[in-house]
Amino acid sequence: MKANDVFKQTMNFVWMKLALGGCAIAVSIVLGLILLGLSSMDDSGVVGMYALMIWMALSLAALGISQYYAGYLIKAGHIAVVTCLLTTGSLPENSFEYGKEIVKKKFATAAAYFAVDRLVSGAVKQINGGLDIVGNVLGKIPGMDSLVSFAKSFVNIALGNVDECCLAYTFYNEEQSAFKSAADGVVIYFQNWKTILKNALKTALITLLLSSVAWLLLLGVTIAILSATGMPGFNVFFVAVILAMMIVLIVKSSVMDSYTMVCMVCSYMQVAPDTEITFDLYDKLCKLSSKFKNLFQKAEQGM
Image 1: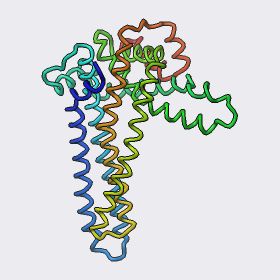
Image 2 (image 1 turned 45 degrees about the horizontal axis):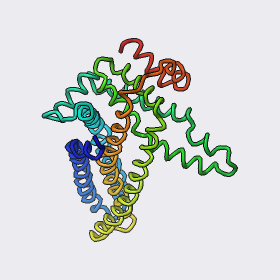
Image 3 (image 1 turned 90 degrees about the horizontal axis):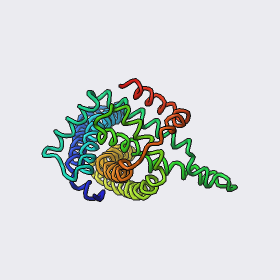
Image 4 (image 1 turned 120 degrees about the vertical axis):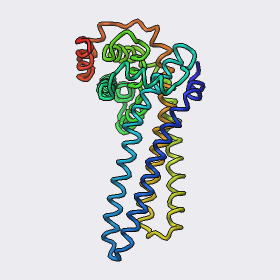
C-alpha cells in the first residue's frame, strides 16, 4: 500500500492534532487580549513588557501540552493504526479506540511509552552518529567541513522518524514485550539503513521546503493583521513571530510530521517483516550506543 493512501485513510489523527493545536492558539489569543487590556492601563510600558513575556511563556506552555504531550499519545495511536493498515490491509472500525487500546495493551501507561520512545530515539541518534554516514563520504575532501556539517544535520532531520518506525515494529510484533520488540526494531533499522535513508531524504527535503514557505507566508500575514490593530511596531513583530511560530509548529507537527512518519513507517515495514535479524549485531550496537544497551538490557530482563 502506498504511503499517500495510508496517510489519507488515517487523516482523522491529523485532524485531532490540528484541533489540539487550534485550542492552544485560542488560549494564546485569549491570554493575549487579557494581558493587552491590563497593559493598556499603564502608560510607562513596563507592564506591557512584562505582559508580553508572560504571554509568550503561557502560549508556549499551551503549545507544549497540546503538541508534545497529548500529541505524543495521539501519535502513538496513529502509529498503531498505520501498522494495522499495512499488515492487514484494512482499518479497524473505530480507529481512535483501536489505537488507544493497542497502545495501552503494549505499554500499559503513558510513562512506559515515553520511556521506550526516549530510549529508542537516543539509540537511533547514537547509531547514526556511529555510522557517520556523511563523514565517511565527504570527510576526506579538503575544505568540505561546512558541507559535511550541514549534510549531517540534514540526514539527522531525515532520520528523525526512525524511532517511530521501531515503535511501529512493537505493534507489529505483538507476542514480544515492548522493550524486546523495540530493540529488534532498532537492529532491523541498522540492517536496512541505506534503503530507509534513501526514502527519508526525499521526504525530508519536501517537508523542509514546505515548512520554510509556510513560515514566511504566515509571518507576513500575521504582521499585516496585527499592524491593523494599531499595536506598536516592536510589539507587532514580537507577537507576530510567536504566533507564526506556533502556527507553523502546529501545522508541521500535525500534518508534515505525520506525513513523514507515515512515509517512513511504510518504507520500514516493507523490509522489516522479511529481515532476518543478525543477532551478533546486538553486541555491536551495545558497544556503539549506551541507549541501545539500556534498551537491550531491559528486553533481556523481560520488561
